[in-house]
Length: 497
Image 1 (tube, rainbow, N blue to C red):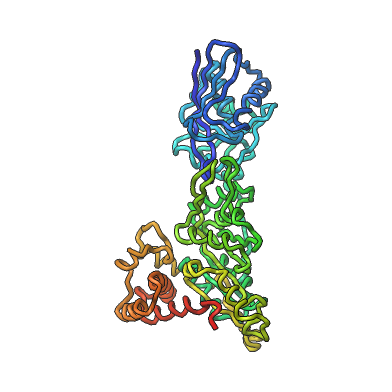
Image 2 (image 1 turned 90 degrees about the vertical axis):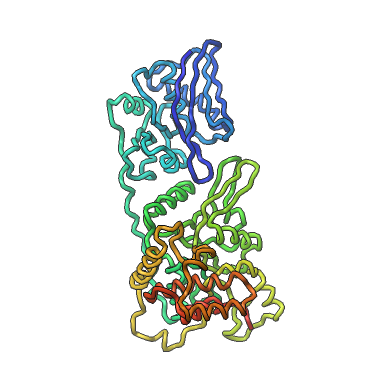
């Protein structure tokens, strides 16, 4: 009897999980059994591995081979366990006697000729490995992974054997190529001074934004420029985004915050993600993680799709409960909604043909609970001719982004290592104990609480007031900051008469 153990990785949602791959070779009729809830692609690994052995001149054991994948209660799917299974069989059959497999993780699919193929979620697998683990992956996965001293790349099973024996180092992952993404510039926007200010406040505090205005007035133009005034992603956030987008088959994004703009015909599943068996495909909510989710023509989205926004807006995650998988997907994004003032879109601009009941029905598509979670709201009107012809250059995205970064730095210093980094995420309990306004601001906020029927509104107004104070370089929100925040929150209680 011979026994060997290696480690591989499987995906759970958008994260990787380590799997112990144990192989036992014992007396009995020649056979191969794979246990531990393998799906079809994992169970078929025995045929791929056996053919790959022939490519390196290895001998397939003429005994009973049992492959155990632990933990046994976790569903295993995908072909990424081919390589750890092959190495464990080589070790158990004493064809790699001198090799120590401790603290080594293998990721990769084997071709019949012994070549290694990239698998879905290789980067997630590397991140799941322990800090002192060595990870061996297919060469074709190295661009996804980027620079990591623990990672060695191999193109064939034979090369993996050479790496384990120390006869060659394997290929090393390089820095991911810098992705220079041209953001649309805010300088292109003429007029819309209030809307530009709302965009800046939203960027500085991480607040959700709603814009209401007739067609062609510039709602999409403004929304597409939000990522251009957001700070670059941190190293940790960039890594999270890279994992998610790699699972979706997208190219690396670099440090630019993602921008997702699904069509209004998108289904709820396309937005929150889908599960097939135990294979999870991230939806638009997760693809927008650490970035911006823009819903143009928001009232045209299906009601279930819109209501699905409520959980990620509050908690930053989407919970999926399916027969094959139960878990959460990260979905901490900034939401930007754009809507027309009425079904025909011309209300307030020219003669509107919509009946009052049609306008009310149209407005009701964005429910009160959803709109209550939007901190900044703005009604857009057509700029004056003088504003459109003004030769004075408008502020660029770079200029506004500098102010946004300064405001965020003030907030981070104030939070002193708290788990939240932007004003929009301050918990209500902390907000009312550690982050109160000055005396004049307290008076205004008290008046807001007395007159508001919504217990959540004063807290949201105070968070926006903190952002306004940060942009103004003030240590605490004043009464004027509270009043301005109240104006921004009520500016587009969208379809008010």
